[in-house]
Image (cartoon, rainbow, N blue to C red; front, top):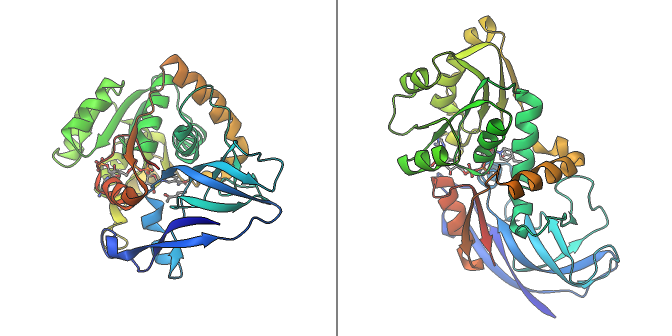
Length: 332
Ligand SMILES: NC(=O)C1=CN([C@@H]2O[C@H](COP(=O)(O)OP(=O)(O)OC[C@H]3O[C@@H](n4cnc5c(N)ncnc54)[C@H](OP(=O)(O)O)[C@@H]3O)[C@@H](O)[C@H]2O)C=CC1
Ligand SMILES: C/C=C/C(C)=O
C-alpha cells in the first residue's frame, strides 16, 4: 500500500488564500485497476486559475493543477513503468491516474512530450499549458506583423514573459508591464524594448512615451487600469487577446475597470477572449517551435522553483503576490 498526501480546499477564499483554507490529507492509495497508473509526482504547477475558479467549486475539493509524474506501477501498456505522464491530478505527492480518456483535452493525462534534454518541468510551463496559452493566444489572435508595437501586461510572469519573447522573435517592438523595478530590468535584459513598473509609473504617460506611434497588439493578462490605458492608446485595427484578469482575482469581484468602448468602436479594435483548451490538439506545434527556440537561445523560459510538498501553498500565494519571475513551479 502506498501512502499519499494531497491538498484539499476547505473554504471559499477571501482575498489572498490562507493556509487554513487548505488541509493536507494523508491516505492510503487502493490497488491499481486496469487503465490506471501509480505515479510519484515530481513537479507541480501553481497557477492563477486556482484562485480564480475557487468560487465556482463545491467544497471541499482536491486542489487540481498540472503535474509531471513518474510512473511507478502501471496497468496501461501505453504508460510503462519508468515513463512520465503529464496530468491535471493536482497538489499531491503520489496519486493514481485514470488513463482511459488520455489526450482528449489538455486537462486529460498525456505522455511527457520529447523535450530533447530540456527540463521536464517545462512540460507544465513554457512547453505545456502556459506555453500554449502564450504561443497560440498571441499568434492566432493578435496576428502580429514585424515592426508592429506589442504590449504585454503581466509581462514577467509565465505567460507574459513568453508572449513578449515570441513577439521579439516575430520582429515586433515589445513593451511590458510588470510589478517591480527588478522585473523591469530582467525584461529589458531578455530583449523587451521597454518595460514599465505599473505600481510606480504614471501608466498612460509612460506608455505614450514608450509607444509614441500607438499600440497594434495587446496581450492582456491582468485587466484593470493597465488595460484601460493600453486600449486607449491602440491604433486603428488593433488586436487584443484577453487572456486573464489577475488584478481582480484577489480583490473585490468585478474590479476589472472600464473598457473604453468608444475607442474600441472608433479604432475598430478586435477584442477576443482566449481559453487555452481550444489549441490542445496543436500542442505538437508549440513543442516543435518552443524546443527549437529554447535550444537556440531565442526563447529563455525562466522558472521560479520552490522545493517541497509542504511549500506548495506558499509558492501559490507567492505567485499571486508577484514573487515569481517566469513560471512558478514546485519540485517535490
Ligand atoms: N485564458 C487562458 O487559457 C489562460 C489564462 N491565464 C491567465 O494569464 C494570466 C497570467 O497567468 P500566469 O502567467 O500563469 O501567471 P504569472 O506567472 O503571470 O503570475 C501571476 C502574476 O500576476 C501579477 N499580478 C498579481 N496581482 C496583480 C495585479 N493586481 N495587477 C497586475 N498584475 C498582478 C504578478 O506579477 P507582478 O509582479 O507583475 O504584479 C504575478 O507574478 C492570469 O491572468 C491567468 O489567469 C493563464 C493560463 C491560461
Ligand atoms: C486555463 C486558465 C484560465 C485562467 C483564467 O487562468
